[in-house]
Length: 319
Image (cartoon, rainbow, N blue to C red; front, side, top):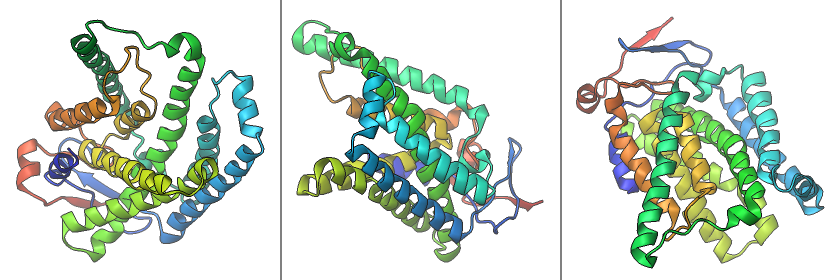
């Protein structure tokens, strides 16, 4: 399934390189997009500040300060929301926007793309419920509702809010909207093969995405073989998949929704199989039809499907 995503990504256009502080217009008849490349210090500062905030938050969690807030709100204010609120303020707003002078559009947040992402996200969530219902009925002869809604409804809603407006929001902005694109740009100057440079950028950026999960994992579970394998095969592979989804759709909001549903499925129907498998399949199906919708991406653009498959050229206009 991941291989299918790879093949789709490299048939479509990838971002071009541009100089620091230079406005670049990726121009087609459909849209013009301007963006800024960050210098290496801003990238390093973002990575460092992210790790520092994570370590400090882990210390607060260890002494019970975070859990107290979560318990007082009966789970509605989840710990992941608190953590990523700090990361959004410190690493994104403070470093990228404040110090780096980046605009939200440079980070993949193009408001015009939100409605389509929302429609696809709702459609995927509904499809998961229908598929789980059909499978459950085929296996058990009945459709059972998820029982945890009656006992932990507030906590489940809090987890979804924490994922959507916390974890997914920060991680997609930071590691896909910013870090992945910056690495693609910089490595693209050194490695001339487009597929190789993009693959290296994807693997490098998502390696750091995996590393920032280490303090939290170690604090909760210690350093064991199981934790290492979880970091390697769950966190790292999820980062690669989300990166591929972003490169394919150019819609960061869509990836945020997929990320949130992956971490907090909020199923109404009692799952009969792992819902993340269904989610990934539906995400890949969405990627196959995305270029045919006449939509363009988050900082880059689609040409017509025929052109994007046949040419790797791009038009570059410096304002």
